[in-house]
Image (cartoon, rainbow, N blue to C red):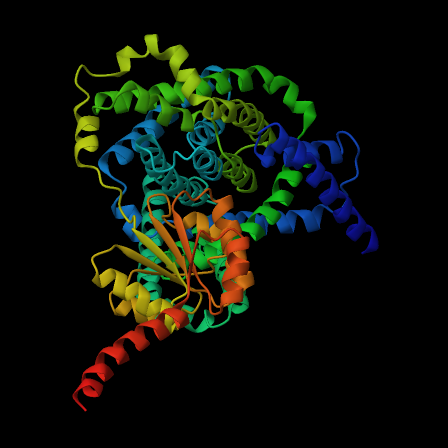
Length: 550
């Protein structure tokens, strides 16, 4: 046990150092983790001996990842994906699979390997794309919203692909019709189970769990891994089961709070998945995959964006919008690697397919990251040759510019909905402002929501939760949080979030206000002092007439 502990400690230290180098190079840390697995694995240093423990953590990490993906896909977002994102997402999926399948067959691969790798080429990394767009402040731009829409389509597609391929496990000589009937039956049964749970069981159960933040976190992980195990038992995959577990909680008011607390755990556990992946790469077979990997990388880096640009140009968008959105699919994702790894566990493909997919992933993620970071200079250079992807009159984009109003964009966000904060938020709403309330008390959040105030349950000091809030167009953030340290932390989190609006913070005493001013609070409110001043003025108006008449 001591050796295993020491090995884990050393791997974490090496991973932290490699991750720091990756960040310095403006690369996603998952590339660094795969490299750590390669270096620490049997191919180089041979220091990875606790394969069983690492493999278990890797499996839990994949389950948590799929759970978080499902958690973000609430029914409201799925219903409002939009025709452009849906058409672009489905079109890109269809064309990439078709062309990729033919291309891989021409390279001499088997039909099953061509199916798996072609499907893997269609998925882009939601985590990486959203992070890059967020850092560039383009998440709420037109191309950013469209990109997020077809990333949602891809996330749904990867789960359906996992279900379909896992349904072929043990099918033997069964016909395609028998497999389809079996899969349809299990999907219908799963849908009915999800409906019953989401309608009658989970709302009350999660409300009970949310009374303790620690218990809510444990419940979320237990629910994700539990349904993952159930999904594997039912003939799907544990990844599909974990996704459904997250999806079943996506429509609850606790979604953002759960997601914020799981993000760090997800990243920590996925570290072991990528280390395990790098350690298991068979370099004896990778040499023969270099040319196919180079060809497929070019196909993903160039072909996928061209497909998106062609679809969006046909639908009436400018070449600039199509180009910027198309760059977000110029890579494959961690889902691609997970999908092919699942194929190995099902006995459908060999280790060569995983090696090929991993090589393509390393190349495309590394290059596309710089393509997205420098998308605007790249567009300026390529603009003269992109005219074929734009109609003479880009009617749909003109309509968007004329009619668009960003959804779910409040004028004011109020943190802390106690007696003062709740009354303040409702008063601002009654005055005609669009207000969003944020509080850590689930009962209070539910009560105010029933009173007509849009409310989010979660910790406003958590950076990941703050990222999920629609702060980009909010003119004001008002904090009624009770203590100075919480308000200091909120100011710091807003600074990290690069919030551009005004901030007002409530202080109970004059000395607290001075400290908050020193901490960077632009506006400080004094409810006690203001209440006393108002009371004196009001009472004076009532008393003076009587005094004058005596």
